[in-house]
Image (cartoon, rainbow, N blue to C red; front, side):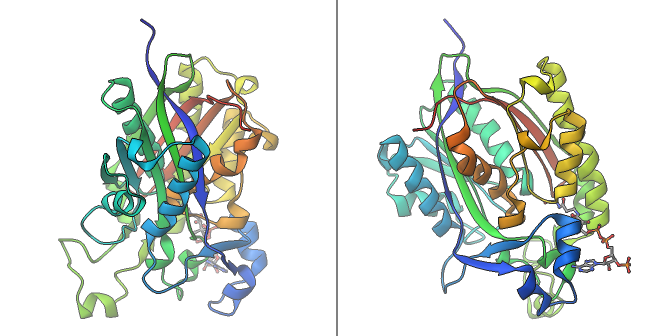
Length: 332
Ligand code: UT7
């Protein structure tokens, strides 16, 4: 019997309508369009506006789109994994809220937190459920409403992050397609450089933590940049080497969109040119778990069955990793 692999069979995405441009940020903090564009590659990011709207509301749009494209109902989903650092509530899991809102009555679900590498960890986990035969239809959501934890008085972080969501459906295939290899890594000692100080069990939210702005993202940009640039490039090269792939074999690098300079360094290390790099950071900024599935969503029509993709990310934790994926369908 041939090996069962997990293949992506549908993609959905959602970005909120409101565009927070560099020009508008210039009126909020001491920054300028030229600095942001040259240091990060970002021109604007989307922000989810509206009372009572959260991460699950973006996910509902993305998942409903992928179900419609695949022509299946929510009842057919076995498992939904929601990768996020901005859950609707501390508990229960946002996956439970999404499955309730879309009417996925037969699914179980859980949240997975690996910051910007969340989607890669999610696809890796989902692929094991499929390969083992435990599940037939698994949805992986990468969604973050970063505007809910960003301090719009901190010019180091508010220029980077945006809101958005992408989602994929994974199903079994006996063809030589789908998730071919994964490398996931983490180093918890990196947490000092990127975290949220309060709101967890060590320091529950209080008036004092709010006053000290400890419910916002804390990032030491330069330190994170240094680790990101090396590790994302290294892990991408490692997965190519161990699968005997050369740059000619790669159709696209699908990188986490944190900073264009990190993406450029990864592409250089892999030996792939700009034409083979999915890049939408200028439009959406860093949507954390959302960046990679949003790229797949935007580039879906250009992808052909058998195309070799390398998905790579680095993020808070630290977490990082790479997935070698053979695209499983021609988009209509
Ligand atoms: O996605 C998860 C992981 N996150 C990342 O991968 C993010 C990694 N880090 C980065 O992308 C970059 O470090 C940043 C974009 C956050 C910052 O860029 P940088 O090139 O590392 O800037 P820097 O922190 O070294 O600051 C350079 C200068 C400083 O001024 P002085 O000390 O040289 O006078 C900063 O105060 O730029 C200043 N600066 C700014 N100037 C204008 C910092 N932020 C801004 C700003 N506008 N928004």
